[in-house]
Length: 82
Image (cartoon, rainbow, N blue to C red):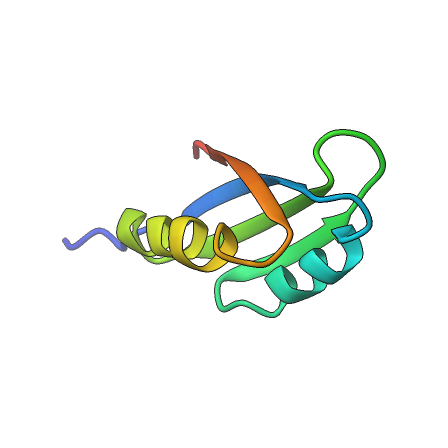
């Protein structure tokens, strides 16, 4: 019996420059694998939830796509446990 591979699920907390939260959240929300991205009050400025096929895909999403967006200062990623 072959086990089905589970997706990697993560909450990504994003700190952005002042005044850019909504724009950054919208851009992140359009990325493949991101199911939800919302600007919010307080710290962090944006919270996103992603489901991807592998750790490598999550790494690419966060370090290449999200961290390179204009306005993003830093991220804090939390992988959800099943």
